[in-house]
Amino acid sequence: MNARALTAFACAIAALASLGSVPAAAGERLDNIVKNNTLRVGTPGDYRPFAMKEDSGYAGHDIDVVKAMAEVYGWKVEFVPTTWKQMAADLKDNRFDVAVGGITRSPARALIADFLPAYAPFGKVALVNVKMKNKFRTLDDLDQPDVRVIKNPGGTNEAFVLANLTRAKVSTHDKNFEIPGLIAEGRGDVMITENAEAKLYAKKDKRLHAAFLENPLTPVNYMGFMLPVDDPDYTRVMNYLWDLLDRRGELKSIEAKWLD
Picture 1 (tube, rainbow, N blue to C red):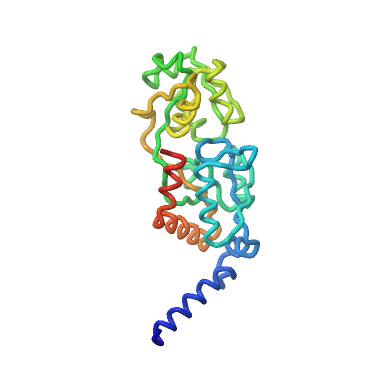
Picture 2: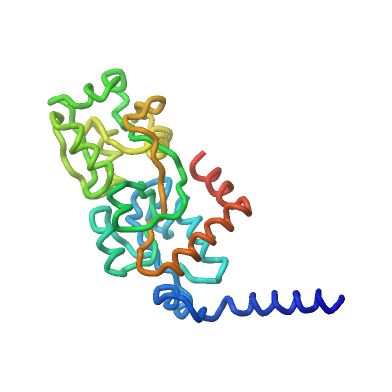
């Protein structure tokens, strides 16, 4: 090996060794993550197939992705429960470092938080009782006084319901993952959600039907991991990790496992 190659090799080893130390110019959030060797991940954990709290722990697309990101630096992942209604406030109050779990990238959220690159394109659709699938052809069909809509509080699905289903009989249920079961049992008629969740539940339970998949009720939108805006160094590192997984093909593998 010539002198130039030896020098390059030594520099590479030094760079790898420095990953475990705090960068001199790092912001406070990144400093704390490196110091504690822990990435705190907030999630409602109630939205299949993105993130779901199960007996064995958290599972889903977003869970696999954030674990793979943390693994690059050897960080432990600490999951912090939150709710859709409280998620933005918890992020601002520094209860966690990143929020995941099928979070819609919205104009309102972009005013208060940053996002990693978009993934999982979707539109709003309706998960309905299969006995009523021929009844719902248009948005106006959903917005009728005899239609029982069940919504989960605090997210973009609730915002859509409140803005568009003003004549329907709307009720609120705090646990998002329980709503499909209520629709299947006939205790409600409609749940507004996104493509991935509707398809998943309709596939698992033949009493359910995913309506409007071919023509969603909204223009296409995307999911995103939500970040605080207090540390540009941390945001830069998280974008690097996302890009690294993308270039390695790991994002596509995880997507094929959970979203196809």
